Image (cartoon, rainbow, N blue to C red):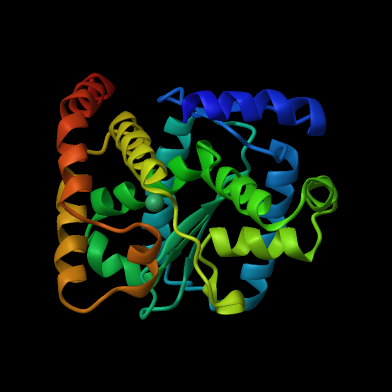
Amino acid sequence: MALLRAIFCVLFLGAFLVSCAKAPITGRTQLILISPEAEKGLGLKTAQEILGKEPIEHDPALNAMLIRVGSRIAKAAGRPDFEWEFHLIKRDDVVNAFCLPGGKVFVYTGVLKYTKDECGLATVIGHEVAHALARHGAERMSLALLSQVGETALEATLSSQGPQTVQTFRMLYGLVSNVGVILPYSRKQEFEADYIGLMLMAQAGYNPMCALSFWERMKKAQSGRPIIYFLATHPTDEARIERLRMVLPRAMERYNSALK
Ligand SMILES: [Zn+2]
């Protein structure tokens, strides 16, 4: 698969003048057929749409907590080019959160009963920010567009940011209210976001052990009543928790040196 990706990168690099990216921290090579600028533009556009449509929770204590945790994770992300914002959407029935390219983070109030405390919230924000840093949406979008349109249409679609591009983008971020479909992240991307997220929260001074208890709570919730949003885009199982356990010592090292 790595070889195939490399071949695709070379082919499309010439055809579409797009760069082949590398995920942060893990260094994995990615095939991404959309420029960071176009991706950021889509992110900002989508953020404005959401803010115009969704009910915003204005509770001062909850917002202060979100901004406190979000700012620490953002600082650990080391992306001053992102215009970070943190918004709380008042939907107790929706267990979801996402970070759009460019740094607009949205957390639904429904997720707070599972995060429980700031450390739990740092797990979710760290994970979502990791998806954005590693450009997972753009990566999925590139594959989705490749399978949907022909080569000539591809270039036009990507450069125009037309309706199809925007719709695919919304699907990728689990914005189901408009399109009714979720495109889940791949398993590889989920593990990668877990790993990067764990490192981010450790760097930000949150104990990475919280991530394990958070995902254990999600797994338990999943076995009872299914949680439609978050678990559809981030399915939880024993393999994910096992992988987290494996990389925990490395995260603990980073956490301990961040505390010094
Ligand atoms: Zn995820």
